[in-house]
Length: 191
Image (cartoon, rainbow, N blue to C red; front, side):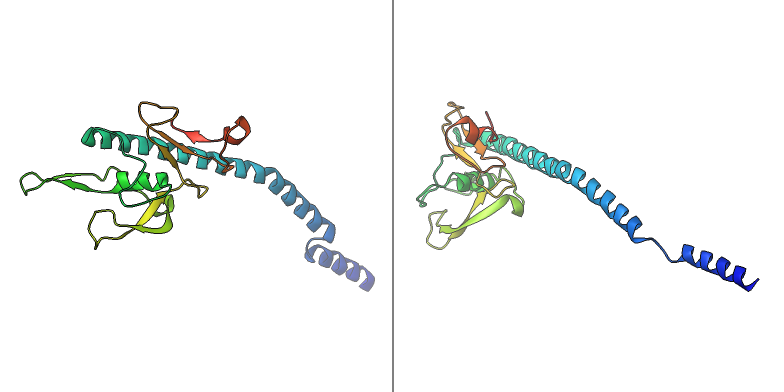
């Protein structure tokens, strides 16, 4: 009788000890397989979301530049007074986010803009400053409009593709510029 009690006790203890090492390895293997299947899908979804965000940003900037043209008669130039060097990404910010005031007396003062507001994560800085209002006291940091990959949005006016207006484009996920289908096939553009 004592012997049978021990058997019963050892059988019941066996079920209370937990998972075996083989069971644990099987569970870990299943989790690893599921993760390897889902990771590329998640990465692809993130890439598509960034592409959509960039296209939406370009479309929104296009509307802002058209509003600028309505007020000033032409699209913004690709230069900023008092700033030298390539500044097309800075021009997008400067001409769409600034408030412009014109007029010589209080009754003639006209204020236009800003045409667009940017979130901080859509802007980068060059480290450069500019005397953008013509006075010696107002020196401002130059901001540039960037895509979700951290690259400058490009602005050309008059455009190469949109010759009567402007081109805005991002180098896309690969960040590559240049000539050739392999370098520009993922570019995100307004044409």
